[in-house]
Amino acid sequence: MRRIAIGGAMMALVVGLTVPSYGYAERSATMTNPVVEFETYEEAKQAVGFAPLYLPRVAGWDLYYVSVISGDLADLSYHRTGSAETTELRIRTAAASANRKDDISGIYSNDWVKYDLSPRMKETADMEAYICKMDEKSYAVHWKTGGYLFSVLSTGLSRTEFLTLLEDALFDLSVHYYPVNKNAITTGT
Image 1 (cartoon, rainbow, N blue to C red):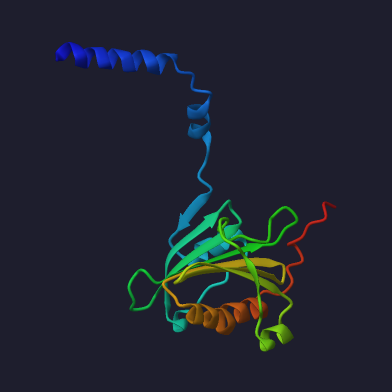
Image 2: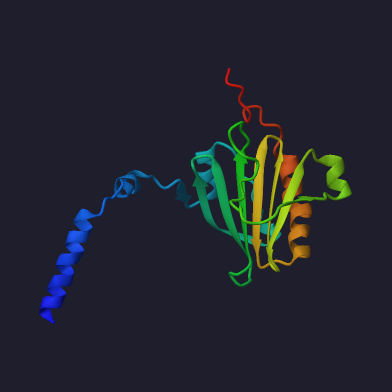
């Protein structure tokens, strides 16, 4: 029995020494994590250089996670006040730029459809939004307005609850508090 164990260990050592690594270990050791976690909203705001879209506490949501991705995309996560942790919102904000795609949601495997804005939003907003359904209680939306990009991912909300939150809070806040960002699109000059 002892010979088998020693033989197995020797075989693993030989195989480990003869299998080429193709540089995977070297690359992964030098790759930095693009996600930086912060304790507060204010810290993330300083890191990205603008005020990310957020839900005020009066809206019934508690901020519990704050991060910045690649130094320029704010990622805020909320739980509904007093509810199970299965009800969650994730709000992302980034300044638009010529080298960034409009969809900052991180959702790539679902079909996006153009969202039909309410008549009130059509009158006041210069924006287009795209929405996708991931399952019965998970939805995502992304949109661009005022030189900024936004996305929201919801878990645990019905479609009606999600759309009400979008129209009555998030779309409205983004249109009114994110004027055209003159530095968002660079021309290279």
